[in-house]
Length: 538
Image (cartoon, rainbow, N blue to C red; front, side, top):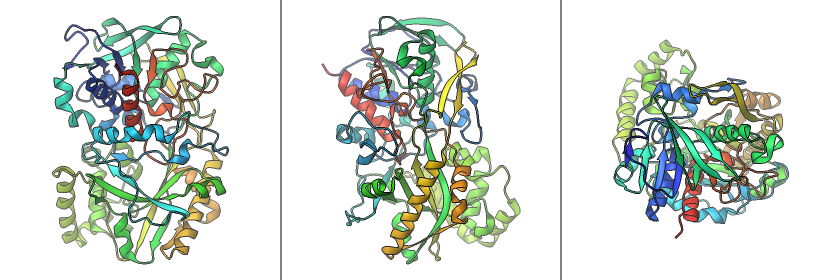
């Protein structure tokens, strides 16, 4: 059932109270309902965007060039950040859970403990079956492997499961209801205080509290609890709010295929398991150990679309559409749009491309719109092949944890009196140097396999600086409530229960001790399903 406010209907008894209706909160609630358990889910926003509620997420960002604006990094509305999500689904890799001294973080569980829950995660994220290995990759001892990423057919989870959420008597969703206080005593949460949009406060007793309101907002809630009880969560010297990570993303090189036809394998492809997929290059575990690499994935992309020098009518048509914030938001997530489209573009150059190649543009645009919005399998993006075999080489690299990369509470408050966050994300030279080594290793491997070659876009000596200039993130929000073995180096245990509050749980990418090479959403959903199985047992 979905109610527009906390006073929309009487509250009944419930087995768990969930804060946040993003993928984590919705998957947990749906899985609990499958087990016959009743859940109260509170969501700060409504069904649609409300700027007043969105402003509650505003934060102080120390370096705006390094972190996305909170208006495009979070979503206070039903569905949470699935409303902003690009739909990429990949599980973590085995090496992410291994002891890696050169990175300095380790999960308190094994990948095998998560694997049973990736099927449920794929179901709720509408990404087909949990198949992520490339059946054509037959070289198990290769220095690089070909991995698959899947894409969601319906990224907005609340829309995909609207019927179940609105009809279930076991899921009680209260919109426009903001958590403003967590009251705990003797290391146990007793109740919460929520505030309606008009400022009316309601106190709700809880037996189990599940914080699932995104990496940064979940961290903010725990930091506020710690400010009121300074010994909580390891105290001031603990790790709460520290080790803030995202991913290192960008392009510093091109990939040139020896056979231009080979790139077809790296296009968006619908496989027999129910969604679009894309192949990526990932360094093998042994190579990562030998070269002290960060986990990273690479894949070919179209040339920078903002530069009309590509002389491609389809790319220029896309660029002109994305340059309009109103139209662009309909095609891709705003954080991705802003990453690829500068504030001003060469409109005349792009218009010339479109007019010169009008037949190509006229074929591409309706094809893309149809496959993006009117087919069961949702086309996740665009990829335009060429006869030269040259493409940009995108990377998506994990960021190593650092105590200096952190979030803290500000003295400034939101309209309900809650302290805002101060976000200070840091990217290190050593991470950029490891990423350069990974590029070099990939280039050697491409040549050795007669696959192609890699060419840097700048002198090799300037590549580390180029990586750091492009380093900016804010949508993945990892590491600030890390999972671990004890309260000395972690906030929650392997079952996501806080060491210092035995009925407080956190489901978020903030609990990840390391970020891996992949988008975190699928693993967040898997952790949510696992938690429901843990606390929803008879």
